[in-house]
Length: 422
Ligand SMILES: Cc1cc2nc3c(=O)[nH]c(=O)nc-3n(C[C@H](O)[C@H](O)[C@H](O)COP(=O)(O)OP(=O)(O)OC[C@H]3O[C@@H](n4cnc5c(N)ncnc54)[C@H](O)[C@@H]3O)c2cc1C
Image 1 (cartoon, rainbow, N blue to C red):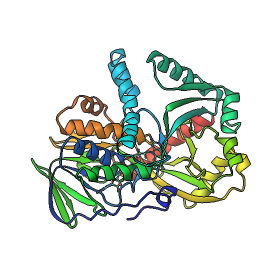
Image 2: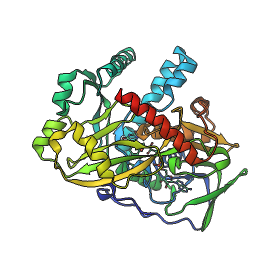
Image 3: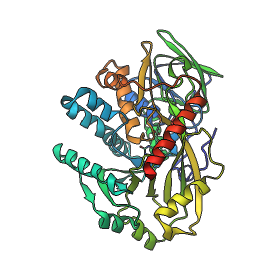
Image 4: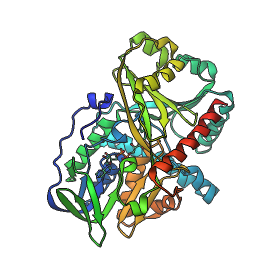
């Protein structure tokens, strides 16, 4: 399939046209899926001298990586659980894991000169006063680690002045996080990988794997034989059901894009041009695009059914935060699937000796996918410390079909929505 009609596809620097996989091919490593996880893994491996083939069912960045909120948010699902298991001695290691994805993105953008509207600054905001305590914890943690980048706690008045809304009690801004055009990043990283010799195949859904010392990755029209395979299809993957079903559940997240806003409005609602996300369980997230549209997303849908009218679903949430935008034109509306794991840890592991997977970023994947790309490349090369640490976090499985699982997730999220409201 081609890209959906999103703001990102409409403003991509270039749309990729890599060939479809035909006939027999061979590589050291075959990666299935060309989102951030797959492309990141392939690029890291190519930088280390491996021959790599990437097989993508649709287009580079077609999945969540090319549709997301573009918010660069440090961390990854499961860090708190790792801290609980390994105690204080793991603090430094976990702190490094937490920020490594941010570093990789910035290193890539600089090294390969990727034009993706990268901006510094991400603010978390608290709709309720009782949520403000977490910002004190952030502050204490960053002070403790001597975090070298700028960060600040915002009181209610500062938050109102910086975001032009009365919706929040306060916020916490970190300038090492930020935002970007995710499809342009993914396409730029794929171009960098291709320039290093990675073979990229598009419009080539993988239909199955034949396990063995050399794994055969099959599509309808061809195959790749490889020493190792990395499965990077996240919420869109159906491969290896014996090992991976009932682990990651696809949930919908939706974004609308306004018309470009006048300079006066931009100055009122986001003069610092930062990404914003609230701290509710069911989050609202938003930011300005390079051409000053408000890209506003949220309202995860765990039922497995997309809303028929995304604008009708999201616009009331936007207007609750910015009533002054009543009447604004909505030029774009789209959605994508995030991979949810019930106990919010990554679903990372190995099937047999040479098939690796990393799925289930639970909607928090721009940085974590970049971190996992590096960790998967390490694992393929035999360095397993960080891979094993994360793979030890066991994701909950829900026995039964995918659809039953989604209904359970829907019930769980209803519970969280009620908690947010209370
Ligand atoms: C609307 C939305 C907003 C989001 N906002 C943010 C945000 O602001 N910040 C943040 O950190 N995270 C956000 N996320 C989450 C983030 O986008 C994802 O965690 C991340 O992009 C996952 O990347 P991935 O490469 O693992 O998977 P994907 O980008 O989904 O890529 C998987 C790819 O695998 C391919 N594939 C699947 N099966 C096969 C097969 N059998 N054969 C070949 N190819 C296959 C698919 O076609 C797809 O291209 C958001 C997600 C969505 C949907």
